[in-house]
Image (cartoon, rainbow, N blue to C red; front, side, top):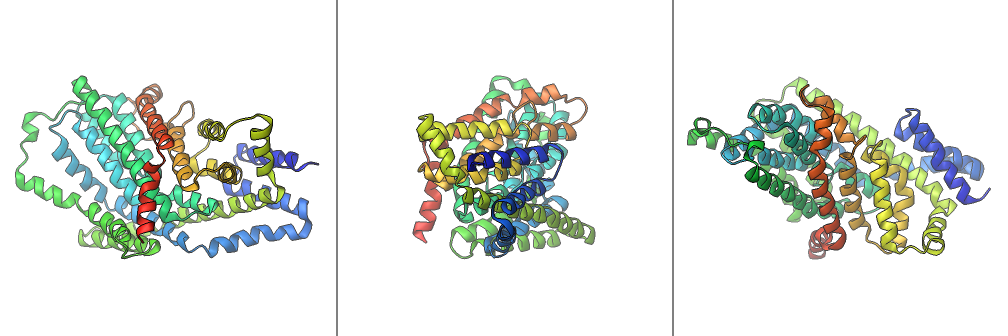
Length: 441
């Protein structure tokens, strides 16, 4: 049997196991170890163990539980609620101001958590009821929350980029820095769209009534000081890292400690909150570590088969495609898979194949990590089975139908495709900051 056929069988069996409802890491890890044993006998059993040891030795992986813990502390203690109240008061007098404030909220939550699910949960439970009560168009605001929550997997500290870094063997710090400007650019494009749309059609996002704008300055300043706590945590975490005072792992520890101290100062750190945050952190961290081990084992078998060279020869020599055409086909495949898989599953399924191929084609792996993440954001929101669409349906009130949710994401998907094209045409949008910071260091 040829190695090309073996590679096809590996992918087919893995997809079959996932369709039957098996856990992602179980399906991928089982296929990797089973084929390693069939190909190389008893010696193949060492592949899974060697990849597990590699994960245990990967020092930057310590950042993963730290940032997840920080995000859960901020969520469980209600500090995110304070932030939204601040945006509500300060942006309310502007047309579409509460929707603009929601995007700002999502950016800050993304900078504290690194998971899109956290942004979606906070937006759907805090922002959505308030926006609907204030007369905002339900189609527009559901799109705002879905688009804003997707920033969580791009703006650092992105958990997805940590996973990509491990599989692609790239520095986490450079990937996080590479996600800063694309993430802020996308958030800025969302804000621009909301502002223009609500200026053109004021009924979609009415300003607060005049009587509700009369908030005493003392109350505004009190809300401002309460809402600044997340910015303090973000500065302690990211600012010290960018200034060179802390390493990547140290900055994650600083962020976790800062979030805990803020919760203590505000009198919100109870045993129940701490227990819930630690339990959820442990569950998510273990899930990601198992996925990383399985993906590395799968990639090691693929490397041994030489499948990457075979696929490169098929695309370049037999089909005569250029590197850019191959890259675009790869991105389109992510959009297709995003209709039934989440970002983690997409990455571990195709990373063993795509990452080496991207390197062979001559593209920068840091830049490609940002492209992958933006494409995942788009796939998250693409019908018929986009991951975020069903999360929103589960959390939205009954008056928001699945049809409303599908229609709500159309303009935001167009904005995200434009942002993806900008990063593809101008790679320095992603690469300038990591190059500047690391060359300076």
